[in-house]
Image (cartoon, rainbow, N blue to C red):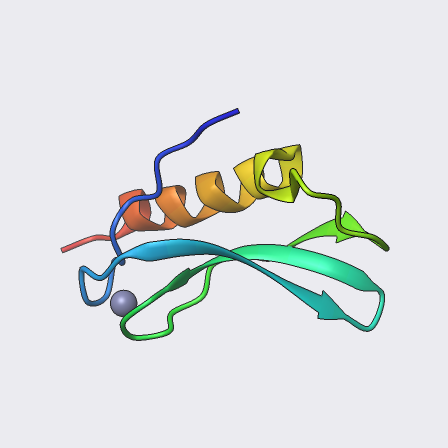
Length: 74
Ligand SMILES: [Zn+2]
């Protein structure tokens, strides 16, 4: 599974797929490496395996970020 992460809708910076451990497990999201803008988060479960970046939630996080860019008006 491979999706291209589009540039940040706010500053044009590079979007990076990140994961973090929350209260109920791990989450994935795309974050701008420049301004820190963050896309929608998706749960990847209690444990994070090696190929978490290839998982469906990660792909959804990328799509959500990309959609947000597409939704920008003016
Ligand atoms: Zn940005």
